[in-house]
Image (cartoon, rainbow, N blue to C red):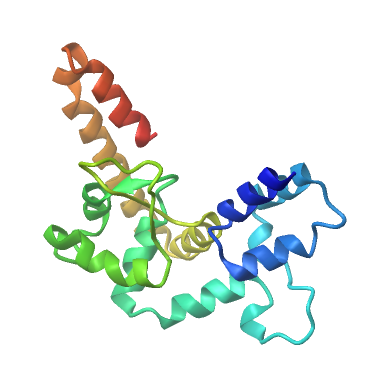
Length: 193
């Protein structure tokens, strides 16, 4: 059971409020039920059971919204676009979605404020020596997607840029897939699946 608790905490990316929300339900829920709760879209809206907390700490949704509002408008736009990634992504993939907002040659420069505020984290598990990878905590990603969906036309454009990038990535692997690098090409593509 100790390993289960470690895995749950890691899946919450060490966010104190997220851990508190899950811990408050640990006495009445099994580990399997807690994992199911974490995958639920309702998790972000769970209310904090403690009475003496500021409004922004009543739920993850409120805490994320409060933190989001502290970002500069350009940082907010970058975050919302990055929220379309399901898993981790490379700097190049991120730059494909935000290149019209920022200088895409300086990917780490425009991502650094989001890294500093933990809106984006380095995905050490999937990173390679050649290519760092990044991801967003699932509750933050859901918040970003919800905000992005408020402008349907903009969301469509961002999702089209996302699809175009991955279509081009797969097409660019054509020669490698037919040659001796097939295994490496498949491994690289699997990280983006």
